[in-house]
Length: 472
Ligand code: HEM
Image (cartoon, rainbow, N blue to C red; front, side, top):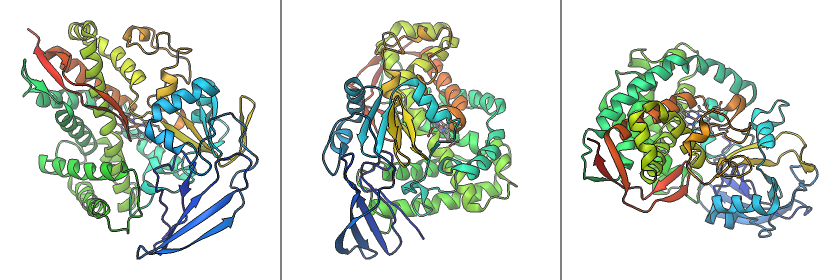
């Protein structure tokens, strides 16, 4: 069975990647980062027992055609800009655009695009020039992830899966999200008291996990199953965020935990699929779809993962911004409909999905720069959302900028754009808006901790703590 893995979590950045592993051995391939270098590949083989096979150096043909011509930081000969990127990705990418412009070469096979027109061209992709997943990576293998899910598919396969799932994500689901999120907000904030200082992470995790789980599986799902899902999701997130990814057969405690969790989540999801009443649109469309058990498990698992961490962090960022802008919080308390604009602005400043990538399926050109087929094309919500050219006073929290609801096309894309835009965008927005208005209705928030931005799988607000002041 073919398995691939990336030891430096760089599958999307592509300056150094690994692929071509099998159960028997793994192959790590390094590429020179200098444009114009011949594709010199160092192959490092590890056999299934974890032993190192003597390394071989091969001269390989480049996967790309022609040379990427955009300007960019030179970086290290072999690891390129990996060091700078890993140390502080948001600052590094922002600085790249400031220094080199809207088309930046991050590595010989990786380009960053910052101009809204180019972002729209890649994500809307009218010419079918970009693909989402050609490099089968960690979460795309059955042993380590969810290859059967729509999110991890491409081409006709993706199209069929999106068509199948879309009827579940209609107005009915959005209305249900408003109702469920309000009930869950009541439940989560019931124990909050004026004068208390809260670290909201746990309560917001419960709120968002219970909301997404009830939306996916209906109301029949019990607290015990929700707790189990929460525990399993935490293990999967933990594994996905580790800095060094080892192949799954490598017996690390984390890897073993992941394997056990994936088995458990498969069993749990299969049981829910077979026994839960069909009172949720997602179960309705998946039941009787003719999909295999494992494809259904993959779909459900990715929906839970995609819809949980991103929403939780968005609500945390909203709390952070509202604590710093009591006038905005007061306005939401007086007029809950204002929360729509607040949430738009929260997702502009703190887009919880902060980076997105595609791969060029053929040679393309951006602003006169040649981008060969095989290049990873990266767009960064954080960078473009904070660009003065598209948002006046870009660093400031100004919900009123959304009065007319508009932004330049391609300049604002917290949920992506085009055919592969987030299927749960309206559901997530509703959930976040409800949580924000329920918090503002009950409390004024005062910052009680230093918040730092942690760009992990989602953009996290580390250290968020608030003192609560009850509204009279
Ligand atoms: C604040 C919350 C959320 C944010 C910021 C977010 C962001 C995104 C983004 C940017 C994409 C597009 C990725 C790309 O173009 O490669 C995406 C795709 C996706 N999202 Fe979300 N999402 C959120 C919540 C949700 C929820 C609640 C669900 C499900 C209930 C969900 C399910 C998905 C799925 C299935 C895809 C893949 C779509 C496809 O490949 O066709 N997301 N999301």
